[in-house]
Image (tube, rainbow, N blue to C red; front, side):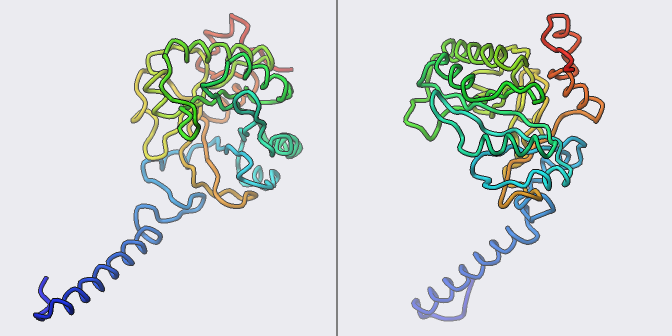
Length: 280
């Protein structure tokens, strides 16, 4: 670009102004009319997950970061379920868990608790903590085991795969024994690729994929039951952003899941083992 001036100082000034204008223009595009233009229900939507917003069974997952939640408004907004953080490791309980647990039940929204697995404490200790802290209410969704690498902790992430799988099995068995329901496995792409892609757990999978549909990111022939499709959701009754999720099926499949605690596509396999019991 030529400015028609020979003064190096003036030329640098004009180039700086041009860069400033371009930066402002790009920032405007990012918030109004660009790839992440806000839409109803999401502050930074991605077109790769558009289908999720049209699926019939919608839900959220929450922790203390969402603050005081009005679950009546959440349910009235069309959300069918909420998973909430309960425990982490061998000694942490989310400070909002019991309040969320009771308020969600009072609002009549299906609720489930999740445990965040850590890799530098014994699975037996974590199982005992979950069993002690999480009520074994019968009117709930199956519990969730959150499997991710602990990237923000002092715990080194590189662990023996066989040891990790053994810990997962211990935790899954304890959660099922405590609640009477087969736990759901939540995971992200890193942990899935490192540990789970070649495993065949019979448990329902809840997959995180915020830029594309799960089948485009997760390989290995696993079906997903729940899909976390954005972390920048907007839901009536919650101040600020929240994770949004969908269930894979229609209303009939959802009722089947609520009654049995199992992915309807697996009931014919797991039912004869007694693991998909219809709740009375």
